[in-house]
Structure formats: C-alpha cells, structure tokens
Length: 368
Image (cartoon, rainbow, N blue to C red; front, side, top):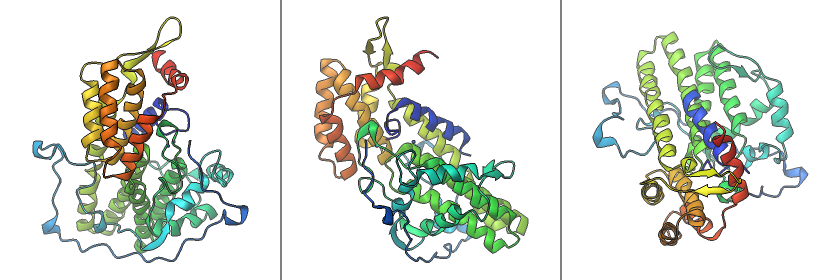
C-alpha cells in the first residue's frame, strides 16, 4: 500500500514514491487517543549490539540480475547486522514517530518548526537539522528500539485512505545524523550516527505494509551506508569500505524492482474522464492477471497490499466478468495467513470505491 495511502490521494503518492525511487538519495485512520500529558513519550533504555563479525572471505556480491534470482524479495541480501544491528529496546518506535503525522499529529507543529530550523549540509545531503537540535536528540533513543509497527496498532488499515507517519521528517533526521557524523572528529562518534540512520531505515522497512515507507527506509539505509563508506575510506579501513560498497550496490536494484512492481499493477492507464467528466474504466490486456498474481503471491507484503487495493477498484468499476473474478480472489485472500493481507482483502471486498476521489486522481494525469 502506498498509492492508496495518503489520506486522500492515491496516484500523487505513487508519483512521490517514484521520485524517491529516483532520488533516494505520505492507510482514514485513527491516531491512538492520547491526552495532553501523554504526548511526550520516553523511550525505554536499550543497548546496541556490536556489528556481527565480518569476514571478507565470506562476503558475496548479490547477483540481482541473475535469472535464478528474479523472484528474490526486494530486501538486502547482505546481512545488515554486519553494519548496524537493531537495538534491543522494548517500545514500539511507531508510537513516538506517529505523534508527528502531518496536520493531525499532536506534535505536527513541532515537526514543521523543526523543518524551518534546518541549515545547509554537505553537497549531497542538502538541508539538515543542527547537530544539537532538541528534536533530533529526542529521536535518537527511539531508533534504538527493536520494533516499529504502525498497523493496526496506531493507524487503521483503510485502503487508499490509510494514513502514514511524517516520512519527510524521518528522512531529515537521517540526513542530519549523517551530516553530524561526517563532521565528527571521532570515528566512533561518526559510526554511531551512521548506524543510527541505518537502524531507522531498517525499522521503516520492518513492517512491510506501505510502499512509500519502505522506499524512505531504503533511502535512509542508503544515506547511512554512504556515510560509513566515506568514513571507512578516510580511516583506511578498506574491509569496512568494501562491505559498505556491496550494500550500496544493492540499493539500485531494489529501487528499480519497486518501480517495476508499481508499473505492472497500477491502474493509471485504465482510467480517464470522458467529455462529460464521467469516469471511464477499462483494463488493458493482461493487467487483471498481473494485479491478481501480485496480490496472491508477491514475496513482499507491501506489493500484495498495494495490489489488493487495486482489486477494490476493479471490483467496483470493472466488467461483470472481471468483478466476479475479483470477488472470488478477495474471498480467498480474506482468509490469508498474513493478518494484514487478510484485513486489506476484507476492506477491498466490502468497501465501495469512491468514484469522486478517483476523478481527482485522474484529472492531473490526464492533463499531462
């Protein structure tokens, strides 16, 4: 789910996701009710394990283009514990990050204010928060937690109306930690910041429900590992630089794979407004099969969820034969072993499609 995630816009978020794929470098939900005294949360204490022991002789360069590996899930094949293991904290990091959700989060204004405090960073990082920014410091222990799960604990799974956290703020945290690490005199301090950035990226990818969250997580890992690479070279640690370079080499295939998945299942080319402003819908040959195959069998949950929301549109707007086929598929998926996939399928099967909302998505595309 990404194209269905921004509170009210499906396809614009797809385009935003595509931008992140290139640059790298928002499910109606209810925020958990909190009174004013509970808005400021303190993370539980945690330890950060040392990176796993790295043996150069055991390092492999993953072959993303090999035919035998074409069905790999879009995940790093290199063990990221070699660079930045997750922390051991028992809290759900999503509890804190959800507070800054754009517009409706109880601390959304603080996120906006933080963005206005940014200063110019290094050439490839852009604008960053000052190294001692209070919000940046407050975020640090939340990156030491072992889990980050938003759905349905904090945000409700609600198809293309499902809300997301403030991903732009998190990406700015990552850039700011890496900028601070690049400026640090101590290699130990620098690596702590780079690894924190990687851990946040790993946490963002952990739940595997929302495509754009996954892309921001991927971008965060990319930025953090790039910091590791630069520092390792500066320190003459060629083994660590080699490891970092192999991880960096896995980023582009995952971005490309994400873009290919989105292209194969999106429905932009199936919808248009006629001369009377009425929505028209017709699936190109093979599109229904592609969407169903992804919904049923993708090794990545986020692509299954994305395709399932597309099935909601087909169920309501497709031909009679297409609708009947989709209902059978959604009935099967409603009993899926993955509870988040099953919940998404039940939503897709039972909810009507908001045609007026879809018109708003189609108009900007049609004008291009």
